[in-house]
Length: 218
Image (cartoon, rainbow, N blue to C red):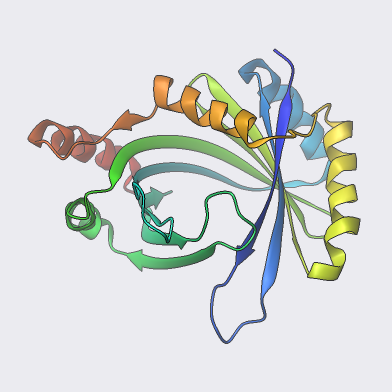
């Protein structure tokens, strides 16, 4: 299977008091057997900044005009709720995070389950590498699915220049930039088929989630 990549722009608006910044991001799917090679190459280009393990309950609005999705997640023992609004895959999505206590995790899951959104649970392991020039490259694995994200915070005038920088790194890592949303949708479909699972809010679902949560708490 050839490696592919998905090119998206995500606009982060952390606060109305902060200057607006654009998160320029390229995504690339890889074969799991390529993980070790890419991680070795990234250690030579930069440094390992963090290694995270994350459990997420994801809510996706079915229809409506805001294209709203919510994540209740725990990463290396730290829990938070993240709400995203705007067209999926667009460059101007708004992301609003809020830290919560790990003892509030299941309660938040129950509250947001009342919205009637489509829900699923997913687990991800990520190695984040810091490269010169403020570039961050994340290597993500989820069961048989693996992908790489190349990111750099940019101003509108820097987009083209920084995109070329990320493309050059992708080429050095032997990644090919994805050209359509269809390829990204295929990754999501494989995640749904292999490691992510539908959360229907049953007693069995909550019991399974509670058991998983214990593994992610510090």
